[in-house]
Amino acid sequence: MKKNFFNKKTALLMVTSILSCILVFFITYNVFIINYYRDYENSLNKIAVSINGANNISPTFDTEKTKTQALKSIAFLIKTQKNLSKLHQVNKYKYVTQDLKIGLNDNILAYKQLILCINNSDDPNLTSSINALDKYRTSCLKNYARINCVKKDFLKIDKFITLIYNSKHYFSEKEALKKYNAVSTSELDEFNSSFPNLVSQFNSIVTNFNSYAENARDKKISYTSALRKVEENESSLNNFEQSLNCLSIPQSKVEIFCALKKTVNDYKSYINSFVPALTYEENSSDTYLSTSEINKLYSDSEYKFSKTEEDLKEFNKLFK
Figure 1 (cartoon, one colour):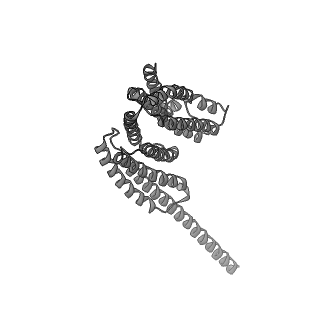
Figure 2 (cartoon, one colour):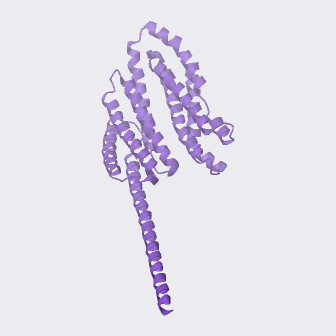
Figure 3 (tube, one colour):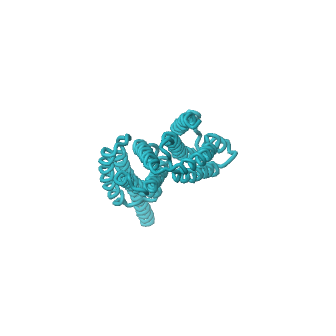
């Protein structure tokens, strides 16, 4: 009897010891994982601070000052890019890290393209350079916007976006001013013939996308369908802008051309503000958003659309 009792007691102690070891292992493992994720999050936060710092620049375009700022931002972002590449990717933040890498690379390319435009502002192919600049800016914005949907206000690049917008406006005006010098009487006739049609085309493109968001919210259409409608509108705008850029501008029409170009840029800015907001709402579709939260989400795009409408009115005064 004593021997059996001793054996049972020994077995119980062994089982208890094994369970204790397993428990200690799982606790230690979970603490390690939590600390690992926390360290990774801290590293990502440092990356974000660096990106935000590099993009915290003057949005006012000035050829010399902007070039100097852009060079500093490039150097800072390249250093940040190297730090990001050293991070060992974890599944939890796989897509955040991927978007961050792509967005950061496009951020650098946008600054490099901006410097290229400044250095070659008299190049006959400046329009192509401006389009490349816009392509990098758009790609950068989309990738950063996806990250901000997951980690709200993680990346703050408003000044960078405004600088690129102001730069494009400057170069577009410069292009317009260059063109009028070589315009003949026949080209003036061509302008007078083509420009009204382009204006009508642009007026048909300009759309307030609020109804798309409302219909998606009310489940009348899907968010995917709403975003597709915006993308189709943006595609029409890009085709229109290509036609507009091919137009030769007489000296007497520079002011009105620049007024329309400014309105077009405002509308593009509106689209680029609306898409991230609608994307964020789509990703939050399972979460209740109050009216005030929705208003706040779309406040920037609302402002940019009202700016488009104001500039369109000013343009129409000149056009009439």
